[in-house]
Length: 418
Image (cartoon, rainbow, N blue to C red; front, side, top):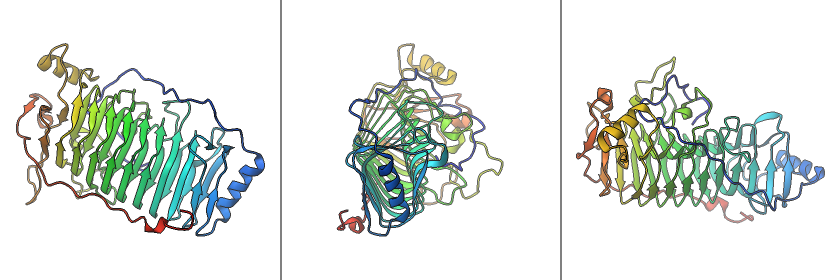
């Protein structure tokens, strides 16, 4: 969620939950030996003096930095010897907002780790053509409000591949792509973050073959108001989204603090989102949540631009495998709802929808939600009526056209050791 996002004046009215916070067991055995001061200074110099086409090879070792690193030159490759062998540590960081900030396009980074940065671990800002491959971003102390907000963080980018990444311990989102176009996030793992994987205000994204577990929320597809680009057209498929029940440890007052603990996949105010062929289970608030801006309670002094579309529309859920979940919602409202409608030992259905629809949709607007995923049920929480009459909804048995696959141009990375 963007650093210049709106401040949250209230929590999500319906969906907050709380579960016992867990700590990741991040193995520290076999860590590489500390790199020499000479090797560390050489790496810093290489980043400053890099020229287009350079491949900066970083040998195995633990490199310690007390301030941010930055790379502004386009066409540079950073290559370590493995995410558990080449480690850039910012545990003693005293200056800078990120671990590594990249503002040069045609950028490739692979086979290394960035640990314990004061702010975001790896931020790539305002560029075209990015490959982030087998990179680990981690706060080694586990979930903590004082951890940096974002692990792997491309923003305002185009043509982005995140492949085989690992993100652990971010106090906002582990793997986050915002205000970007043409994105693939695949084969990656997000664990013990507030939000595991998040696509926000972005267009054309494929999120597939990932594992999101032990986060507060597993995979989030969001649109936020008052940003220059609205997001749409995201496919979420072939993922495992399980046991996302870690207490939300985001800083109070931030938007991400309203992400409900115990959520599998959340779609908020976004359009044309296809969720299919995933294994989603044991997320204790709900396995899938579909909501509008009106359920959030986000507050801003400037208000919301009239051009902002607050409704979730064209959400297509089909062919997923659901298991468990919905058994321990943390709000008074949801607990009462579960007990009243499903009994003490019951559970909320797999799909929770806030019930808001556009009263005057433009011609050609798709339905808010189509579900072809028997035997999964949809609970309409009746948000427009202050949740007075929630009920199992039977109006969502429909299908929508399949979204096209995202095709990236990776030709720029061919040759030159890339």
